[in-house]
Amino acid sequence: MRQAWPEIPYADWAETCAGLHMWSQIIGKYRLSLTPWVNHSWHATLYVTPRGFSTGPVPDKRQSITLTLDFCDHQLVAESASGAREVTALEPMSVAEFLSRASDLVKRLGGTWSIHGKPNEVVEAIAFADDTASRPYDADAVGRFHQALISIEQVFSHFRTCLLGNVSPAHLFWGSFDLAVTRFSGKPAPSHPGGFPNLPDSVTREAYSHEVSSAGFWPGGNGAEEAMFYSYAYPVPDGFNGQEIEPEAARFDTGLGEYLLPYDAVRTSSDPAGDLLSFLQSTYAVAADRGGWDRSSLECGLGVPGVPRVVP
Image 1 (tube, rainbow, N blue to C red):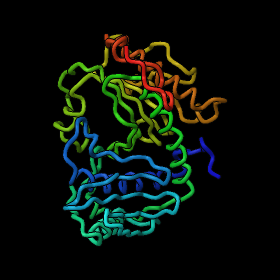
Image 2 (cartoon, one colour):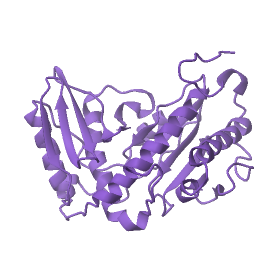
Image 3 (tube, rainbow, N blue to C red):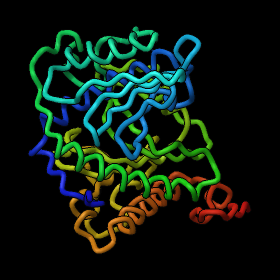
């Protein structure tokens, strides 16, 4: 039986993680290429499932196709509404080879394959078809990462229940490779300056069209070379940094401009879910209070199964 909050030291599986990031971009771009645009790019994200990462149903011609990175059987699974199913193994291979296998599965199901051929939000955007170096695949590390995400997603999804306003699902953004949940004040935000590597500024500006308090989880990289939770606000309100937050292991990183909480501090806690929830709630409160959000009309208690929310 898998551990709920396993060890996932980034250095031990960094190369596998980098390859998995590119694989996630490829299946995410399949969803992006065929799904009508939804606010803040929510139409393009992946979802954590009990088996791995899923695109959810993608409208492809007159059917729907779902792609799943299955981290239990370690397969890429393609399924169509007709009941057809095609699989290929997840194993050591190049990004180019994964691209070929993914497109082949979709075409076998009668689907369409026409994606943007380069990764987004990475500095060195090598075209997928040209990324021919073999990548390792540490199945054990991937399984532990998946189990950690299952536990994290449950906390993120519970956290999102206590906002009556606009709040995102807990979903995986394959560009930056982070699981995220975002709350919105309802007020428009200043135009974002953009500047993310290999990402059109128009996409960034649409994503940050309204004031946000966003939290998430990185497996490593992105300026934090260990598994890390983060929380930030856009626009950044005056006095956002240096506020008292929970738990004790959390801190503000001046370089990133975000609050951070090491995954290991949560994993080794006597109450991992409780500590993570306190981080989400306390950093949101800083963003909302310093940003002048109308909290009395936006918030309610944490959701309870079978009980309708009390609306102010």
